[in-house]
Image (cartoon, rainbow, N blue to C red; front, top):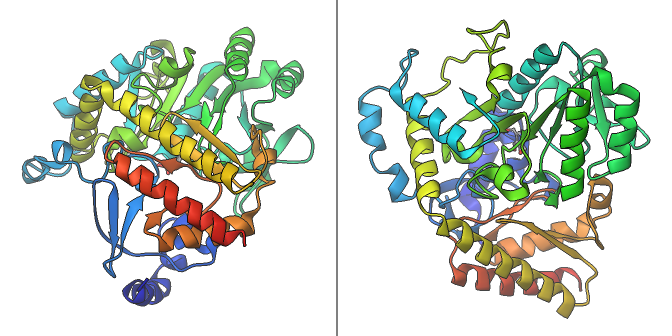
Length: 430
Ligand code: PLP
């Protein structure tokens, strides 16, 4: 595989940008490679500057439910640009977008658009804290909620702990009210509420964690979070930045049948343009400025280009429920193929799947939490990643992320992927 141009650009990139990238995982550092620089993408395929073609399972880390640059969504965007790219005063399309989101998410009455998932979770927590007049928040180890200071924590020792910063630059004081529990651990949740329940403003959780591979929340775990937050008058926040409009058109409300008090979105609601949103019941959203006292704002929030793409994306998903059935079928086919590969090769590995999120863990299952994920054989994964890449398949360059399927992935793509992964597993385990 020729990577000459990517290598040249990378050299220049490192001179002007930290690590040559604008988001760390893009550097391919964890798999010991240099990053690929991309020229274009269409459907399920992505092309680098050296002309190599890959079946793409990163799909921009989730926003592209219909694949790259689907004409049903991108056609017409030139007309929008010509009318102006941002006004800083309201537009009708923002109202249309809010209406679509609220109608699709029965647990909420109102939504506020922001520019990223990070902004959505950070703002939702601020609102929840103001609403409850409490400071503590509870998150789960292995769940990622963006890079705002209070959420950049890992647990200390033990199953229930105060968080410790995972990044220099985050003061201990800022995370002193962030509690951390093991994901899917019902006893840990009960214990932490027994001790701190009356001080907990909010619990924030990924209903299916896509940030430690793919680890679905157990139904009884999510139900406990619903019940216990109700009992203690804490706000339950579903971070649906990955799962929103992916697991189901009604997101986790449809998939698990559980209603949170607040929700955070990103990714799919922008179809590849920068976007995020948070929402909740009216009494909670009434806290937000200008109705209420909680300040939160954004120069580009509700940007017309992002709203145009996002609205079209959601309308297509709403009006074509077969997209979800098809994605479920294709993802099952991929997951079954991966399972059959590992069985044939006698590897004691695990495949997790939820909707169109799939992950092959290089460890024995079951994989239910972060501790389980850390048992993965990362050096084997890294060898495997390179072999898969050589065969024209782009996976996330880390064991800790999902394979994202889009509706543009064909049966042929999936069949080829299963075959190529078999070969890659075989070679990397010799
Ligand atoms: N929440 C979850 C569940 C995510 O997966 C991410 C990013 O991947 C975020 C929040 C942060 O979103 P963004 O990268 O748009 O800031």
